[in-house]
Image 1 (tube, rainbow, N blue to C red):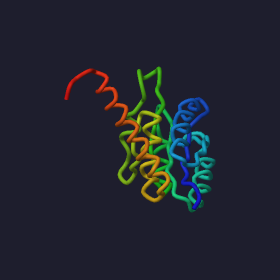
Image 2 (image 1 turned 135 degrees about the vertical axis):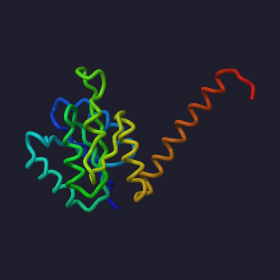
Image 3 (image 1 turned 180 degrees about the horizontal axis):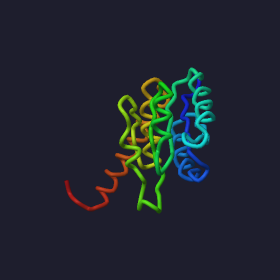
Length: 162
């Protein structure tokens, strides 16, 4: 069986560093990651062409969209594909964080998830893909066990008796 696919679609090259964090985390779950640029506002036909290309790929997939300001990209993508979409808007100096309102409010029938932390967006994608790929699911479980072990180790280090 081929590797599941995470498609990271950014609205502009300005979002590249944010996307690199998502890609690095996603690769840790042994999924294939591709990163592309396509704006819902400026290059709608190009973005649709990319989405059609990936929709034709029979592998299980999740799209992660990265766009700030007026995040049309996430809704645009969700309306054009059958696979899950996760919106992970980048932080913005202009808005004192991420401009999340355009990511949260979508029209009826458009339902991308919104996850603000890049590594958590990758984790959600892996959890979704793990439902149909045992290797990815095992990586998610391993990740969760390591997280739990760290908390328990830290707790033991506090010197409390229990």
